[in-house]
Length: 362
Image 1: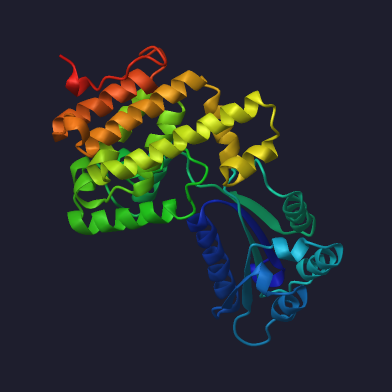
Image 2: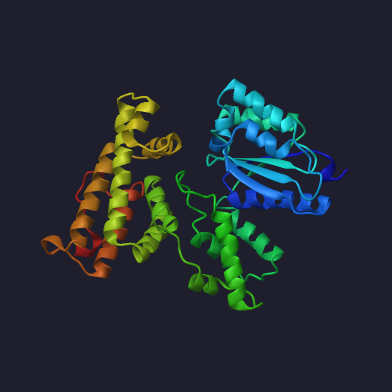
């Protein structure tokens, strides 16, 4: 039986918009093949549509030409009440042959914190004979292989290290929960297309990637703050080098100062027995990010965090050329290296001891 002979309902959830759009495109192409005419693609946000309006689009089979593919981004507003959910279930059950209904749920938590109402909606789609599929952006470890696979599909030859360098430069390894990964796959594909044009059929090298692919801000800043918070000096060092190459020192200092302060607040809240909701109000941001701060803070003590702040203050004075402190580029870079080794790495200098920039030692 062809897709034109049965209803088409698809539920997609995850944080990879590129994968979602590819699947929507496959639905459109399938209906075009079966009906002999391209369907209308109607896209709407769940907050701007009613079940009745959806039904008008998809409940009547096309008599001539193509049908309609209705794409609903964020279906949450359509399941906020029992009456709305029942009406939406009716729409799902009534999608006519030649039409399709696609529901898109954007979830950045990796499936850990999906609302129950949407999980239930996904189950309802499957119960009605529809299909549900996760669309997760490739993880840091998966992205190089994913890029290699897309390059092969596109007929692009990648030299040693090229895929890994693309993944790094688009920021795929950044673990921060507040980094938007929805377009990361699309960015990677766009960079592959650009590199293919540049090389004209020749293998793309890692040097080509470094020359043509711009390094993203999440790569140079968020990766640094994440590595510092986790006390991963091995990752913080390279991330610091990249950050200082692309950002003013004061920007890096402000970001790290804010992160250390958040860790101090998390430790203080823990010691006072505060509830997670209290910490969300104190730090701000979404609960997942705040939970990450609490987990990262567990690797520190209050004296260690205070010593890290003191070290940032010394670096700030150097950046501002205060008190005749060492201020050449090389001296400041060595002072940053010393801060990572002494204040970030576990087992560095004794917490609370004097923080002496390496550039000023004798």
